[in-house]
Image (cartoon, rainbow, N blue to C red; front, side, top):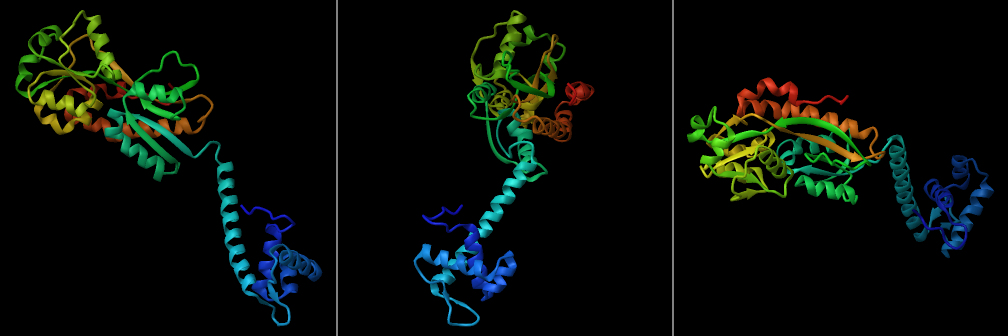
Length: 331
């Protein structure tokens, strides 16, 4: 944006003077702008007065610019291009019902599996967003959303009690029992109390939503296994089980995140009663009215294409549950 000088030198005047310099004729510049030759001459004099230097050699035909005039013509062209780009950017923003930038939080197990595909689609796909993404624990994203440090999140935290957010359910996943490969046969058809009496429980950190969720489930069953080993990341938890340290209660997405260690574990259904968690896309109310549903549906499609087939490879018995795991846009 050009800051207007003390007089009347403005973008219109710059355009007129630049046209005179480019065409070498005041009458030609006047025709371009629908002005008389006199009006064009006045614009040139006004510019020269404000700049304090002659812009044209008037004794030559066609008119030739002075050194100052040549510099002004080049600068004016650059300014006009910048103004044109700014106007187009504003028009594009006006055509979109919502903002184009998004600060997105991703729960760690989603970020380490499906998240990269979602980010690529949001940045390079039809939405073409300017995106900043953070991964981490679900509770950290809840707090960040409340203090407006992020705009939206894919999270396992239901954020109960918060009225100013909109929730778009993506999918739900049952908790699984992971045991070392060599003890898998001994754990089949055993209840959870018996299994935990014979094996250490490797936990998700109590700071994580999954860790808190598992702890609540165990308390409901009257189980209080010793707190020995807790991990924030799924790959660390899988590594402990694969090396025979103990067993773990986790989800398919966390299993997929730690897939590098999957060959050393046996994936079993969690002994009844089972429980599950939901992954949800959340935004603040009235900020992403049309964009929110589009991102949520994109995330669901990526789960169907990218995650569900991998779940079945790691735990074939989960295939009958796939329809139950997915939510539709109407929920």
